[in-house]
Image (tube, rainbow, N blue to C red; front, top):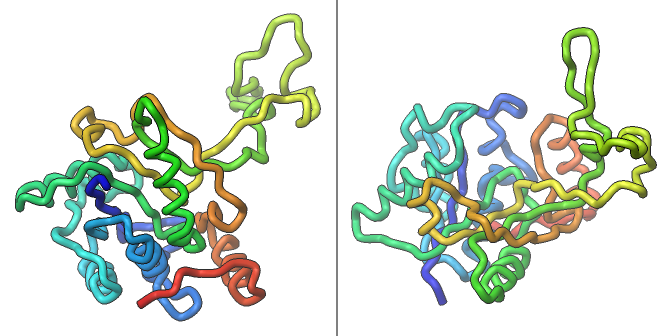
Length: 242
């Protein structure tokens, strides 16, 4: 089996849900569930948290993850692309002779993604011949881009180019539009060679369709409230933390 590392990104500067990575959900900090899922999957030679915070690093270590170095502040802004901190952490590990063939991104914002989800994605990723570059979790888009607009001063225009001589996409029924999928934060798996090319996705990208709980993402405060309700009612199960 290819050597693999799981990365759990957990920077300190969350703006939409402040402190979410260590905020307690059902008795444990949010990032603990991604660490637990990665460890339980049995697929990874290392589970590593990338953070710019000593506080988050201490919490991560207490749940069995490694934090070999803190993420530099310039790689932990709200607009920092993932490739920057991925390359940073691969470099930190590589400097001490720890090289991996595959990396996975398991974001804390998807707490209901369990070990079984990761295992299914892993098997699908490695089943392709010729090999895929990466696999990424997606779900059916409920707000179709064909009905989206861009504001231009006091007017607006469709986000997507409209086919001439046909009914505009914004005037069609949803069922008449092509299915479109949107990525969620559940998981990504890719070959580490892509990082040398300054990207994490590549060209041959495999879709991994998640169900409603696997792909559930905590991006806003109402999402947190919904997550608590899902746990309380048994609508979703969290990974068992050590």
